Length: 277
Ligand SMILES: Nc1nc(=O)c2c([nH]1)NC[C@@H]1CN(c3ccc(C(=O)N[C@@H](CCC(=O)O)C(=O)O)cc3)CN21
Ligand SMILES: O=c1ccn([C@H]2C[C@H](O)[C@@H](COP(=O)(O)O)O2)c(=O)[nH]1
Image (cartoon, rainbow, N blue to C red):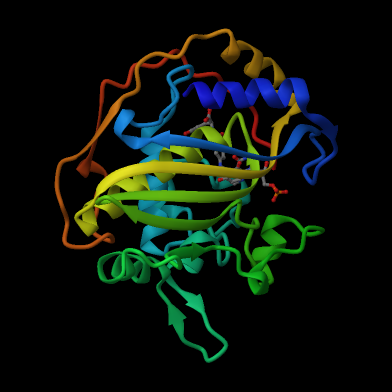
């Protein structure tokens, strides 16, 4: 995960200080790309301990089409609580856009099922894409997440918004475009999360894994994470863990938490940081 640590260093030294929606203040750069060869290990930070359960359950939750935090809470995952209403609702966020994109004709498009079908039927297609960026459901930036949900909008605009798949030599690669990137908290989760999705999709399509390519737009470090970033940059990364999927379910929608075993995840202690809401 040298590339991640180099990105933190790059933002700290080359970034511009800017205000932001949350009022916290950030240092940011615009536009950055990193490549992770998924055959070289599972890209999960070793310079701070990550909560594997949150990564897996959040992905299963996205794939189920669910947008209520109840499932996450029942599984000890707290990362979406601050944006939810009292009833746990987040509005039409990732799950709805991935699985139930609504058309003007009142029908629904299951983008994930379509991707699996395309990868099997026409793997050289250049249109194997999932978009969570649905302008008609975007929140009003002047309102709170809960007010937006009450108005039928998303609690928060999608950050990891555009996913493209690519097959060559029997290997599946995935590229993510992330428009807004909280480098210390969000990105640390987003990389293993999409690496996990790539492994799942590859298994379902009978492919090996290739690369995960990450592209960021507004790539920032919040001011109240500077100290934590400094601490992390003093640490040396160690060997990456390895992901094993111990069962092959019949569909991309039938995975369970227990299907994923992360071998040899040895990480340095967790570094707590406040999340900007
Ligand atoms: N400012 C901000 N950063 C984000 O990364 C982010 C948002 N907002 N809003 C929506 C989602 C929620 N995500 C989050 C929210 C919180 C943590 C967080 O607090 N992580 C801690 C604790 C992890 C845990 O309890 O599992 C961490 O140390 O990683 C991470 C990702 C990613 N997203
Ligand atoms: O998966 C995620 C979700 C969110 N983030 C971060 C990026 C920003 O810091 C905030 C969102 O604020 P906007 O004003 O909507 O850009 O959340 C992330 O890094 N990863």
